[in-house]
Image (cartoon, rainbow, N blue to C red; front, side):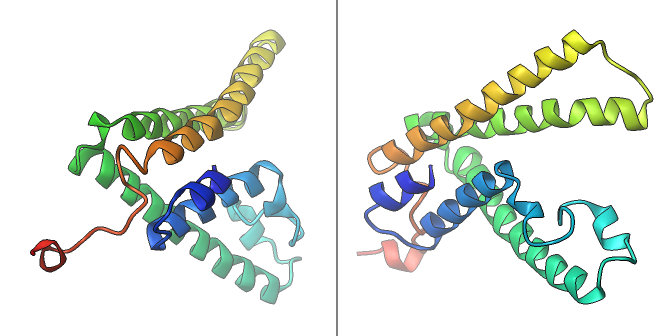
Length: 173
């Protein structure tokens, strides 16, 4: 999806760059790179509470995590603004973007459901249900970037959400 944005979008401005970065962050997270540069995952709160981890490492990791969260928040605001305020759901690119974003949320819910049920609610699911939900989750994670790529690819002609928004002064002739 990041390559589709970088290759297909002709006027490559800030929104397109943010989408490229977010898609690369999603890929890095799936490849477990959020654990590669620190002793544990920077996306878990217990990492920052662990006194055995050097304070300087936790500070740098926190700054990186905050920057990543800000980029993802901007991406989310851009997606929601396009889909609902700018009526992007009425475009092909918007529908593909909505389906891809929805599958991303559904896949994360399936991914975390076993841990939540086990750790918080102390419920244990049968092994066949765990295997079934894992297979669905992996399938959704496979389909998500494909749908986001399709959305980015057709956004040049239908649903231009990867371009900077023009102010009222810029729109006037």
